[in-house]
Image (cartoon, rainbow, N blue to C red; front, side, top):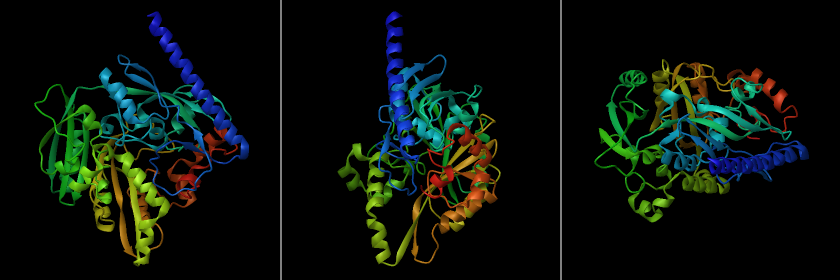
Length: 456
């Protein structure tokens, strides 16, 4: 007991040192010229153009698991730890975070500040709804602990969807759930969207389901996938190299994966976006090798192309333009079928990921209000190619109007085109102004609208 207590105290001291050094760096950066800073980290899951900063804040040391309490059902982590490292730390203890976003490189702090979701969200809500408490580094150098019911409850509620314009989470306590070694997967295919969404609605109340999501391959080709933990299986599938997970949805009724492989089933092919890099061609897959098949490698390639704009230059020389339609939008279950119809008619990008969400807390973030008690996330990530003529953001604006008209809300990790007044109406403008006045009165960490819409 003495040794365990000593080890725990050393871990706490090391964390305090790292957090203090980071908070001091935040304060220095904010004092120097009062301009916004970004984090100095190897990977970003934002998909919007932004001005390049001269320097980033040193967050690279805040990547540790601090404590795991299996019986109490929580894990303490530092804010910049990527989810694959966190999952690797928790699975040996027989637990996992209640909501693990789809890509390995997403950080815990990033999933809170920028909204995180996955196939457990139909039961456990969004990532921030699984947070018990958090320590936040503020621009004046303070580190405050925020919980749902302490003096910083407003900051606790306001951090989700704030995109680091209020502060940086240095430590978070998040809920865990028990796991078994394997996941049994069942795929149900539908050719009628109303039947699909009715089955999805019914699945919310199925106590035998641990995971739930779906894919629309076409208007008459939808797959609803459920998963449940099991102790033993005869054999498991492997979608980490030559086989491709999303293709299996249309040909298998039942499948089995290890718990870890299920959690990262979408990462190997970035859902299906690896096709844009040719990585679904068998010979290219073998050339890349298993270690390069994953979201980290694809993002490096994508960002290299974005920096040098080789594809964009070639397209323009040929008289074409491309518009990236990389969005996640949330619609009430009641209007989800109408949105899918409009999206397929006006945009036509396929496949579309469909993930049900429960407003578990009943008291959602003021900066990202839940559209309903039960709602559906649609994820679509591709580009449209067309002859020059459409105004900038033409197709993304169609999506934004449809989401607003149907009572939904969209995530802000990608391009947005809202007018400022409309943006503040949707994303809690009055609450945000009050939070800025209390925690960042000099606007040293930037403004949410400027960051997410103007790209500053």
